[in-house]
Image 1 (cartoon, helix red, strand yellow):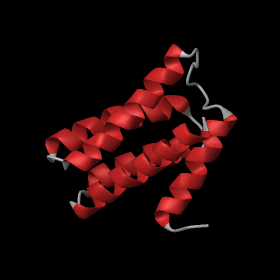
Image 2: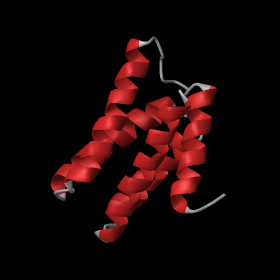
Image 3: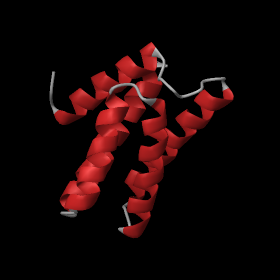
Image 4: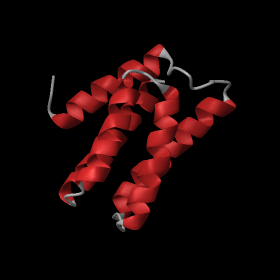
Length: 109
């Protein structure tokens, strides 16, 4: 599960960087708020982020490598749900992996 969190954390950062590079303040604010909720371990916020990110990536013709990250994140969420997770709250191991990889991808310690 820690690996799942690692992928999710890197995905959040990748999407936020993409939106920032496009100079889309409304999208950046919306996705940033959702990302902050995901970082608290809110699984339903993760679903909302995935949906909003997909729309944004599509609308702004995201590069293929970002779509690869999106596919990985989506596959993780599907696997979690199939495995019985309700996604109200991320499990502790996934959440800790997400926080760690998010901070690492941002260059924080």
